[in-house]
Image 1 (cartoon, rainbow, N blue to C red):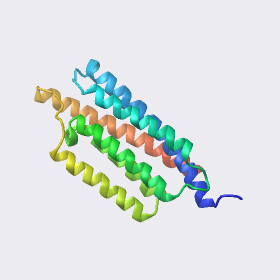
Image 2: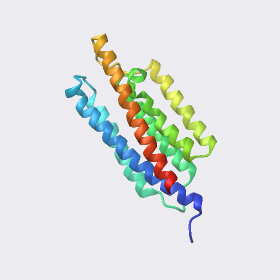
Image 3: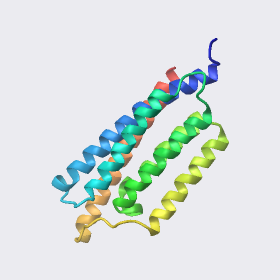
Image 4: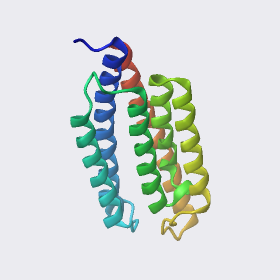
Length: 179
């Protein structure tokens, strides 16, 4: 029996999401490992690396779990929710809302808006706003003593977040539209 076109589309989206998640894990791993050396920032490496390991295990499990006949929109929404919570936890450990990478919370929301019914996309947007709101008041501060250096790091991080977000959105949307 063949899977319905919507199910096949969701499987293709799941595969792209898994690849996008690998890129995100790799970029975050590079950032976590290089920040202490190149930016002279003391980060809580053990919990950050543990979160990245959990994200990698989650990505492997989701890659093996779904197939065309049992994968639904709610499953994709659940994966995006896990991504949001994991990113929120990493942001909690690295300055919360003051971390310029906070805008990366928009990537799962953009994927949801593109790939899921409006109710799922709205729920994920609400989760992202809730996480951002929570991180405004509860987070471990980044240890940057000099305000001028803190501003330079923040502006550089904002630029990097914008560039990475733009590239990932173009890649995801172009690949999904092409299929």
